[in-house]
Image 1 (cartoon, rainbow, N blue to C red):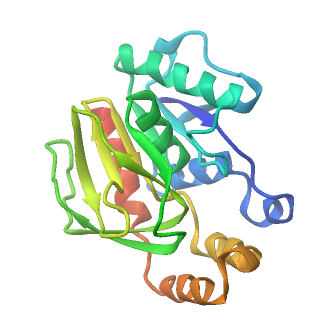
Image 2 (cartoon, rainbow, N blue to C red; image 1 turned 45 degrees about the vertical axis):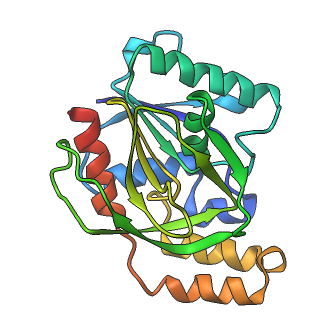
Image 3 (cartoon, helix red, strand yellow; image 1 turned 60 degrees about the horizontal axis):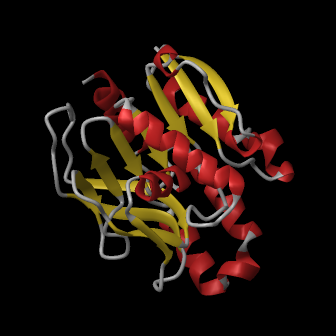
Length: 233
């Protein structure tokens, strides 16, 4: 399958040598389950987008430190592009920022959460098991790193996984969009490095709790298989 990666940010320079860029993480995520995919990267911050929407079997976004609600030209352009994909019912996987961009494109609402930062392993209840899901589960534990959350969903959505902290953690939008607030492409070591780097922002208590949560193995493989099930359905 041919995959268009929509890049929305870059890894900090000090972490690239060890962990790669966000696009590398996505490729590694699919390689870990033996998926035979061909990729092309489009940097949305530079206004790069595919001309032929039919050339790609599915699209996947990276995360970003930007806010999906920010009135910035490249973000507005990205929302418009996602709306084009929506009209043509192209399969799209939204990760973190991309999850929120889909909400903005679908007239949902995204806000900075009053609950503060979510970091480390996010434990979620799986509350829906759609027909495409070949490996149902009751829980989904995925690394997260976010302040913003979807606070209102439009019609034609289905929450797949949820928690008290983040009610809209995994969402299916119609039959062609699937998105997640967490980072199934991140390794625990990267999450650990980033939390330590942000300790002054997060505070010691939240940082230490997030680091301790990494004792739980993330369900990256499971969710990656869900992605492949979804795009093939």
